[in-house]
Image (cartoon, rainbow, N blue to C red; front, side, top):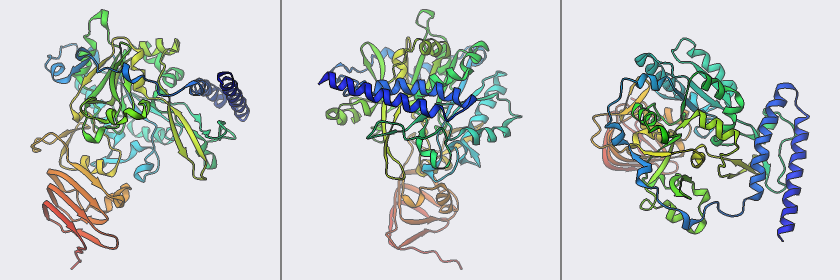
Length: 492
């Protein structure tokens, strides 16, 4: 049986390699060279995928991380910042993961150009934050965007508007891998085109690809030569992921013989975060455990807030020299995420991906830092967008901070129905964003609109049944209210 399986695996691998060679013959010059590098990474991933048997972790070997490897942020913040903080900033590079499109929120083009606050986009806010740092400390912290083939062209056009800002901006492209037909295990693509009918055949292989594509772009070496030592990596849609001087100082002041090469910011789990990856101790190393790696029998245990109390925010501080060393030694060994998709025509495909945080186990003296929830403020849906546009937050130099008028630190739980999914529809339904300082919970379902200067307090549930419409009148104060049925405010 084992011999048959090995023979089948070799057949699949040989067939895949032949198809990739065929695809390369459809390209010329620079495109062929880039695709060659991408395909080398893909072949390695595909080879490992064919060899994977069952979950990648043994449940009985999982332990909670030792306390001395998860540092509490309060203790780090209690340290007085030294005068040398500017010197530390000059060794830092900010990297934003900018490969995603805004399609899930009904927008075209890169997600980073959706307006999220006072007409500012995710990208605007990032540039403002870094420019403020550079001016305040008289330093040169560059911004690097990891684009995908989906976002690169549009992003480069938009970057022209920042020419006169005090931020050096670089970009590089993550790899482009072929989607795999689930039945035949062969690429769907017939050539290297990514536009029109061909767009579905390719995908960017997750943010774990940052290490290889950063290295292959030549930018990694360029930054090391310029004296940069660490990158701070985060998702561009996480508005809480700003450069934190206390974490940077903590990173830079670790003992020389225990120089930390990787810090992962984690935060306390709530019931909304049960699927988030968590840090564990495994084979005497810190390791990221994702839900996809958990044996089915233990999924409920993984989701429990009592056993696994923290989750990964994907805010990471990583040594550039260590990335170079580990990439050249081919020593990252990130677990493969198999992501099944169904294309528009009904074809079932799989995407092989990796996660940037999964490489933590390869770095020396890695740490977790348990940060406040305010450093994890992702905008994935219109419900998230409502929160960041509201008076719960104030905006200062590109950074959002919770309003001091909010009496408790947690954010309200907001669930907006499908009528609000697309940003355009969402904006049409609010004449102005409601006052939410005293809100705990908001559920809105159906055809609902909000007039100007509405206040929401406590728990508010608004449900317009099919065929009904509810207009919340201007100036209304809803406190611990359930509104349902049909409520039309007619123009006079």
